[in-house]
Length: 169
Image (cartoon, rainbow, N blue to C red):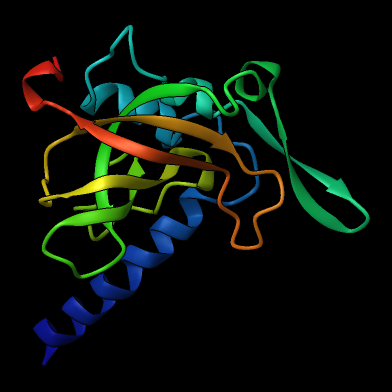
């Protein structure tokens, strides 16, 4: 019985520790990296691909009691441009070939990790479907900055095509 109680307490402490790590109070040490910072440790840097650090240059702004994104000039200059983005596929639909998915700066495989924010995700629509892959993928297409998406989506990429995996590194 004591062993069961110890395990139960451990299960309660994991979410509490995660909640403590994300309090609004500033922390001087032991802070978790942002998704754009963390992505640099798990994704290769590419000179021909849009950086997640660039996509992280957005701040929430209050307008008439509503939070809206305030994008940097660098991000706004990318709107309607053709770009490449490298990231991890997060399927939206249960299809065998994926044409609609989220590309994330962080891998979706950690069940205890806090999810990344909207600045670290791009909604992708490909011209032709591709198989799911747990490894990073690169897609190119028309990039859009979404100022007023009711779902909170900040970025999308349409008319996308996958870049061959041999070109990732």
